[in-house]
Structure formats: C-alpha cells, structure tokens
Length: 310
Image (tube, rainbow, N blue to C red):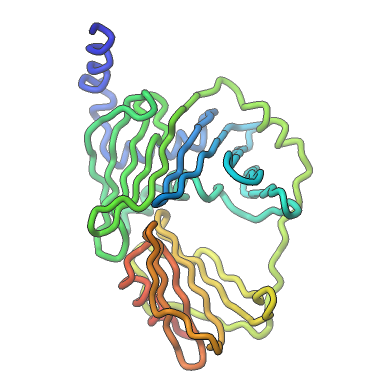
C-alpha cells in the first residue's frame, strides 16, 4: 500500500519546475532531450491491425549524433543515422545512404526539430498525467488550427523528457496510429553499437540524376505550415515511365504527390486504408496527379487540384 501511495504521489505532486512548464516548453524540452541524451527505447508501433516492435538507440560519439533503429519482426532491417546521413541495411539488397536529419518510422521529424514551426498549423494544450512503460508522463495535445490535418498527442517522460507515446486521431477521434515505448533506459555513455557504427565506412549518398524532361511544379494552395521538402524526378521500374515526386510536410503530417502522363489503366479517384492513409487522383490536362498522405481526403484533393506549372 505504501508503494502505491508513493507512486500516486509522483503523479499528483510534481516538482515546482514541472508545474511551471507550458505545453510548448514541454515540447521544446523534449526536442532538446531527443538531440542530446544517450538512451535506448524499446517501442511498439501500431497501425490498424499491424504491430511492429522496434529498438531505437541514440547518443553522441565524438560530438556527433548517432542513432540506430532495428526492426525486430520479419527479415533483418536496420537504419543508422550519423549526423545528417541515414544508411539502410536490409537483407535482400546492398546498403545505401540518403541525406536526412532523422530516421523515419519512429517519432515525427518536428519532435527533434524546431517546435515553433509547428505553431503555423497547430496549437499546444497541456493534458493530464499518466504512467507509460512504468514511468510518469505528461500529456501534450497538438491540435490543428484548421480541418486540413489530424490531431495528435504525445506523452513526455517527466524524468528524462523523452517521448513515451505518440497518437494520431482522425476527425472522428478514432486512433489511426500509435507509437508507444514499452521500455526506456537512459544511458551514461553511448551504446557500443553506436560507437562501432561511427567507425564503419557507410555507402556514400547517391545523388539523384536530374531529368532534362522534368517539369517545374508548384502549388497554388497548401495548408498553412506545409512546405515542399523533396523534389525528385525518376522513371518507374519496368515501364520506365517518367514520374515526378514532391514530398510535403508540416513536421507531423507527410504528403507524397506523384505526377505522370495519363496512363491507359484508370486509377481509383480516392482510397482510404484502415490506418488512415488516404489517396486521391486528379487529372490535369495530359497529366495524372496522385496524392497520398495521412490527412483528410479533402486536403489531398485540394492540394492535387492546385498543382500548377511554374
């Protein structure tokens, strides 16, 4: 009984410093912890009926950020980030590297980035406190200022300020996706695997060759806070048809836009999977635009319709 009362006391009577933190301050402190702390997180990633167990390690070696992500189910698959380069190691293909300042598939990029940039599309609201993975956590709700994206929320560990759980909800408040820590260990020094990763000769980043027949596309409308993060021109494997790709993000939500010549095979006008991923198809003159993202259909449709040649 005494242990139960002590556990409740930790949740109910936080220290004065924690009481003074605003919702934004909690997020900013979390962002700093993700960049500075040495830790290991065992994580469960849930999307609809699909569950992925992961292990994520982070630390600094010789002053440089190193991160390692391991997928525990299925064929071996790992990702290593050294500074702003992420290398992928998979069982059925040679290792390759890309430029990126985070490893996708764990926490949103904005969590370890500029939290203030999220204020263009969201407002931050403090929630209650709860235990996640046996650790007291503070809830912060990240609420969209419009109807063009979904609401999210994050529980932040009250001791390390690292994220413990992240949820995405649709407009009907149904859970679309969840990333939840089941064990968090703060380390006193970088994990051995991170030290060894720093020593390895990882593949050089392959620069995408530019196509001379590509177009310069822009958007007449984007939800506030969204920016074009990637532009890429390539040809489809097999058909060799040219496809132009634009990646949009507001730091939490990601949208992929593909543009190609209209094909003989008709595509569905819209599609939504059980994990909330939506797709819409629009025809612009002789081009076909496919937009995919975990945002409302209406948002994707308006973005696809607003694609114009510069």
